[in-house]
Length: 162
Length: 271
Image: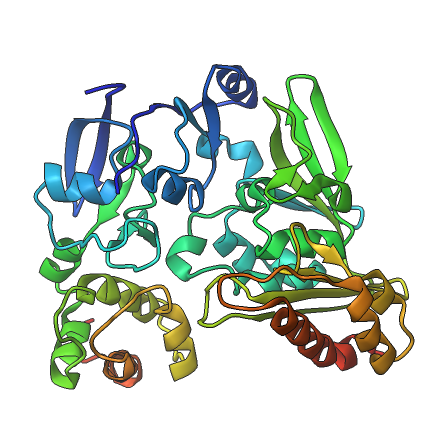
């Protein structure tokens, strides 16, 4: 591997060390080296949002960050957030509201939506739309997605959950 | 597509960065939100990427003697959340929410946007409206470039090989100062069809357009106009926007006038 470098990062709570080529994007690294295929690759130039990840707590485009740049970082993917239960309320609301059809955008959409939920703000529908404006969905027309996110933002968190 | 092959280095000091940038085919990488797509699309093929994000000295926002200095590696999100920017550079605070989307704002930087100088970008027009200075550094030290001189042409700025944008220095807004940033785009976060950075400082008004030329365009005659109708008419002389794929020159000019009308009252009414 030309120009390869060793990187160590924490992915979904587990520390991993790998040798990577600098040209490899973080999302390709997660998918191909670690088998975490929940983060999708759509456009590969930062437009569609299907590869949205969390790096050191902030959402980023997985295709606009190199794996070498994640050296020393904490990376969380849809798998980690789903397994930990952090996304449970959003997932249930997406299901209930029919906020997905083909599902390709859903992991990225959930990551972007959870970023808003975590901020614990009573966002308006307009603000919800602005926050997911970088995530494309070609099936739903967004209405049901906004409904689902709004439902989670406006519903009281049951005791011991959230 | 996937990026071509390149080497990668992450310097821990500016001196080390300048040394690396002298290597053949070296290219500076800041937030990467424009450079990495251009690599993915194979529009760019550097031999060495010099990742500047380890340079902590370029990540601060300071206020000293009426000047707000924003480090080149401050991200859009940090600008969006900065109380100093909100209070002293409200134009930038209004503009930043038009920069792409949250996930991109978390990584993209001020310096990257200024050094790239996309004609549809928000910050270059703001810098020209605010009469800010761009701080450029090289091995020989720092120099200050007035924003209107920094943006020289389409994606062309006053940076010599081996030099980096390290900060922008912006005069803090005065008591009677007013700022308005407006932008029209098809969808939230898209590149602007046309945008307006308007600023009143010390009694003088500056209307600066983005997406209306190869560089930010200072509408000199409209800025000097005494009333709105005179200003709108003056835009015909100030602006000659090139058509893009979707909007004709006439459409852009019309929209520029729409923005001027929207900005006028906010800017001209005494506080």
